[in-house]
Length: 257
Image 1 (cartoon, helix red, strand yellow):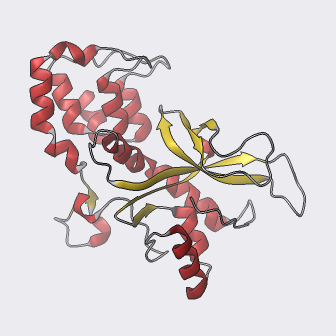
Image 2 (tube, rainbow, N blue to C red):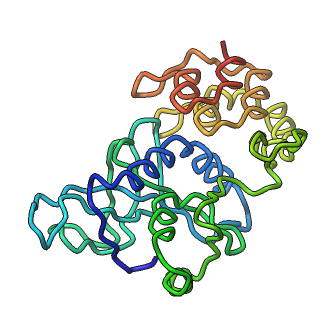
């Protein structure tokens, strides 16, 4: 992960807006990871989220908040966890490789890349926008990735978009292609062993809860078809519909309701 450090004021409106947009679209990052973990051959070059840590310092030489990238990301609808990818500069007691758990509101950005193409990276692009062309080129070369136009954030690959609309700004992000492509295989597996639909794993979650949180409508429908109990709650007291609502997966919420 890129080790370059960029300073900006805590009240920088561009960075704050970028972080807000990153949290609003985080559900697509999480959906992508839900399928990456099922792929035999990984498709993502990188996947990480940026979390903001209080430094406990208020000086000219140290910011009050340090943003650090975290990999091996997990998410339960309330908390983001993962492993620090960098050593912090202004925070003592933690280092690269340490596992971190923080509330979702502390998440300030997300990024994943496929074939070198970057998706997300809202705060990164807010910073890139303030660079000249040479600075931007050096920055991108350090990452070894294609960030593209800093004014246009890619959320998902174009192949995921519903392009029936003539206006590109109105393109709808459709269901993940793997959700539809795997439908027959999932259907077959559930028909052979329907008892698994209500099994609770070591984390206290059911398959339906995981798919609802990830926004995978086709698997949700198939699980209900084979008798999944949508009223089961996880250890935090969330049923599948609650998890879909947290992420604003409206089609799943409507279907479960």
